[in-house]
Image (cartoon, rainbow, N blue to C red; front, side, top):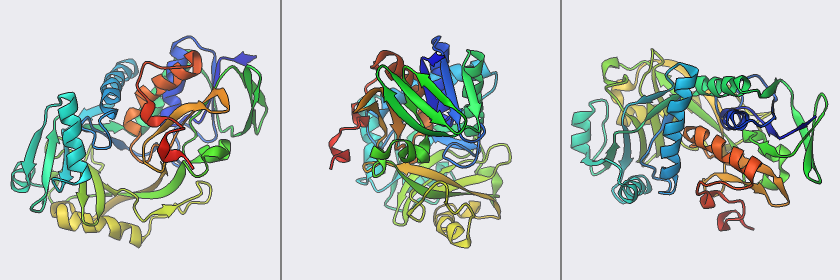
Length: 377
């Protein structure tokens, strides 16, 4: 059998690609080295942030608009709520990259927003202790996704549309063969007209050219039982992304008893092999996050409910890599999501299906090209 496409990795991005490919009538095979979902990569856990005011670059905003629409479509098909709107806060110095970038995205794309000084934010959201002279951009469309439920919903949609998905089958190598690609796994060999690589932190094992362009990093997140839980639940507290003297922090209000979630970008800056990463959470990991809680969210500084490790896969400029392989145009790679990719799963899945089946996409993805200057050399 020759498949129209094979997808390597069925986490957030891969499960979405499988769903989009199958729903277009493609004969598609998904290969996942673990189960769906699993806790070894980047797509596990309860929640992930979604935000429309995008400080990273204004070009993300049109993709986010499409992503929101596709998340709502997936909810309807799955028959369950996956996306929760809480409003979002981007905070820090007025001239810092988070606030300045968020404001630029809002202005370029006409997004509803407010610029608040620290006192106003702290009054409106009593769980915050934003210091002067920091400010905050409030954008009402921010919220969170139920991450594992989203992966399961995409995988279920893919199977319902006819996709074949093999769990606990690890891909070892792929080889271009004229107009097709051969994929060898631990079990057997498969052939497809197109290959989509969505292997997260294992990308460089399958695409060695990305060894220094998609680098895994150990990450730890913390959930607490707030001292004043009424201040940190959905409806009382927004998702946030903030720049502080200690680094960049992010967080999500307590949902369904999960606790208040806080993380720090690049946590302890530990590059990691995904097969050998330290998955134990240590006192040193908690201390990094308690600093932020005590200074900026003291009423959330209660007992630990949970701590988990996961993996970022960082590109040099922290923008995504979504492109056809430069030496094998029927191989499509999506990698380097740098800790902020999950919210885009729906639209990235659509883009990957476009590239695999049509060779191009209507979406603007120049920012994510393999040959951009930041990835050269």
